[in-house]
Length: 426
Image (cartoon, rainbow, N blue to C red):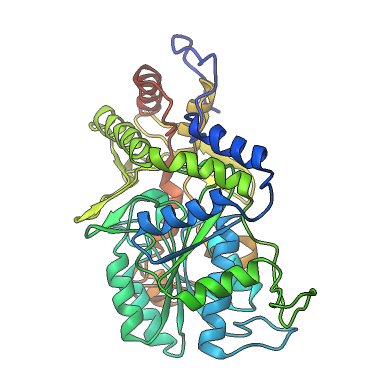
């Protein structure tokens, strides 16, 4: 148990991991929706969010939906029907089909695959980027050449080699769904995250780089996909005077009120990115002589720096053990672990959190396969035991944590957090 040093005073007000930052325009557009009585799932705010979202991402079309998960679901559903045909009403579009998915991500990335009856096969994480490993993806296609869909997430706003992922998909005749929920405004080779996938999704959840409290957009260059997504998201109602339905639909459309918040946030996207970048660089400078590494930045990429995170060098890790709900560690001089750092941050009324726990380690997916550069991680083969097949995601999870990254945090507050982290290594 971490014992707080008395000379580091807790903050009077909590310093959050990443909280919404409002500017005023949001209320203006929400009030317009109220005054004009456009409170449902149609209105000028929705039209503008779709226009701006597509323009910002460099895509032709955006469909405004109630959250990013619904956007990903419709991406998966359309991809499944395009690849395998329209399913029976009692089956999903991917029924029984394997789908390659990012391993180190939030489960919302791959839940839509399961909604549609697919079988996730997890692709291990690249040490150099903390994102889907292109080498492991190639290995997965060697093992399962029949797979025709890849769902790839971008971690904490720091792009991986999504361009190479796309090229590998094209080589194998597979579609790519890009989960850019955390990476809005980030770029790779001067191209916006969210524009690499055949279908992509961005998020306006309450803790994202800009927010509507909820909401998301499906992004596509295919007008047919955009029109189909709008139809599916409004219960798949047919063009008839009465309520006629010929396929299963969903109640996924964004409200014009929520769209007002997002519309007011979009002008501040670059401002928020600059603030998050300053936070990252302050952590990097303040912790530079410690045995840690910050989120890696790939050449030719510009992150949005949504969450700053660190991993501890292996030889400076104290003993730590975690089950599905608790964590314990033994304090050692000169060493620490994510559990101690997070307890230390919490002791001064600030919020951090562990790195995403890889999907192949989650109770519901422990029997699913995960593929690394050397082959199957799940199989626990002799090669795995000998260390030929690494489990990179599990290692980053073991040694990593996310730091308070709220763009309203002052430099003085961040300096206090840095000092608390430094003392964990004493």
